[in-house]
Length: 67
Length: 361
Image 1 (cartoon, rainbow over the protein chains, first blue to last red):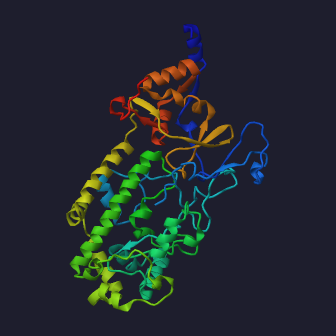
Image 2: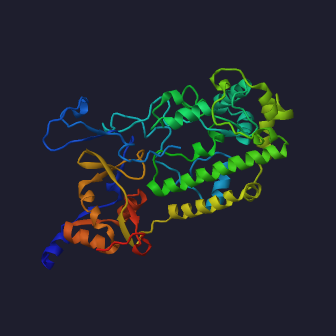
């Protein structure tokens, strides 16, 4: 990359700070994955047009930190 | 200004002494306005707690001295908790000199049900008032006082509280036995050659094994409340050094670990080299990725621009990684954000010299 281009990139750089990584209410849920344009067979209203790849947090290896 | 964590009366001065300073409150885990309940502004794809219980689907064991404090409590806000302890003692079910136990039926159900926490109303804690307030709040045991769904400092906070939990569990067990020794009761309980590992029928409304009950309690049988209150009086004036003196060596070791975790909690240093630790992308919401790292109870929203530059943290010096991200991707990462990525377990410090399997190419 040319020095000029590098300087240009630095000038136009987007700033990201701690506030940009936000905590949210609730916890991890079952995960629906959408694959390309393939119409899926999900029966869940919220995921009607998605391919029904449903992974529970536990299956996905997400740690549920309960006592 | 950071407020102090709300700890049980007995444990607050002990933990402050162990840590060596004030313990910051976990302000993201808001019991009064539960952060795990769905609200009109909540995202659609999240695992929420049941509104009747919030996180209180866990029934704690009460060590004898805490049971005694609850039974001696005159505060009206603790009335429901006191009544629940009195009722269990009156039934003589899972009532031992060492503790008022949650019983094996609860342990079996809780242990065998994945993701039961907050989502199984049938496991509602019996110390909760009908209005949903904790009836033993001022004297709740370590496991309840140290568990938070979300942590201001993510995994860094979780580590501190988890170690505090381990420490307090150890203290509770050791001090409970110490109280028993002081009051010359306990040979029946500790002398059991085959420890109980399954529920007794009394937990399922069956008959009490009275012979065994009398063996457990000796001369204190029928005076259980008096015994628990006597234990509370023994413990209430102990300073932390006296606690350590009366407990086993594990307490001293765990106290050292809590002190170390507290030092990390107070630090905002950035490791010299970083690499990606773990992050699971679980959805897309409002132009951000929804991600989970150290805990499924504490998901984050991550801007796509940030997700795309994480790969630069590959073990090279952190300064070099930040410079490369700036030059090549036109993104400037504030150091506070880098620290937050470490706190939440998305990035971790990396020392190639300590790697068990060093990179060969």
